[in-house]
Image 1 (cartoon, helix red, strand yellow):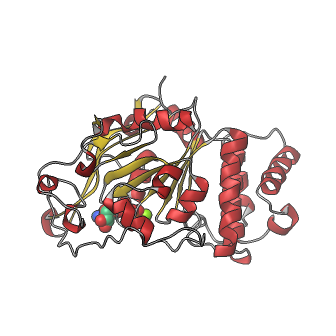
Image 2 (spheres, protein in one colour):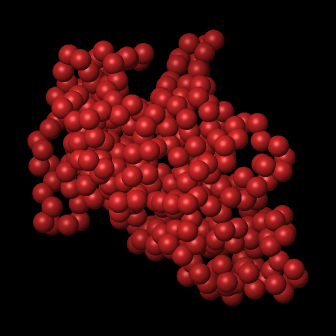
Length: 343
Ligand SMILES: Nc1ncnc2c1ncn2[C@@H]1O[C@H](COP(=O)(O)OP(=O)(O)O)[C@@H](O)[C@H]1O
Ligand SMILES: [Mg+2]
């Protein structure tokens, strides 16, 4: 079975500054798959700078990998033919933080919906196109008569983001890559937008890659989670398992820092404190070693493999768990496939 989208051992290195002397490893040896047969919601979580947007951009074909390969249906994403690229543009949709950044503010919002309808020949007539647009807007909880004919600045951030979700719905893609889709939306509207993204998954069988710095929204939407730190996977697996009992020191700190709304949940419970790491570059070992309160000698030598600490539920990339069976990082897709079939 060929995945719709796949990263195979992909790294992305940015070189900036004078003669490219400043090197940032934004993503390091990442493997991930999105399968057609098994639609999933996967949350990619990590603080700012952990490589989440880079990961999404590689999967969307916006950036070429520095090493490794990104595939669309088994073809190298950087080498698609025109026809393949068109199919890719329909099957893989993006939702970004600032939904109208890519659109001309002098067009009415109808444009966002009419362009894909004509580009992908989704309607047989004008009336048919109108019906499709109205259906899509209603499906995301918008009233067509309040939306159509308006300009972007006449609508709220929440309405604009829902139009983008409606657009994704029209195209019936296989995959949606949503990079911080609710971080510019009022807190009161976040839940409804996340719900409409969840509905796309549930009703239409669309796989969602939900990229966020916000663990609470990941917890609410995601059946599985991948925690990134400086371009490497720290912990991955079933969201409930990880949030209730994080095992990687980084994830524990991340979860402790969240003011969970549930009063029964003790937070700050692990009493771990990050060290003030100097965060050196070119590190061979665990990316988190410099800040890890539980760091050991070996953490500086080689990146830890993925330890399967809970059978099929979760892996933690930390030597603290070296009694558990170890998987190479390239096995993450196989492991996540097990997690999703178990939930
Ligand atoms: N175009 C770029 N040029 C140079 N460095 C970049 C570029 N884009 C991102 N980076 C760096 O790569 C790292 C990962 O960035 P990014 O993928 O945007 O992370 P996130 O989305 O998790 O905040 C950061 O250190 C960031 O500064
Ligand atoms: Mg980002």
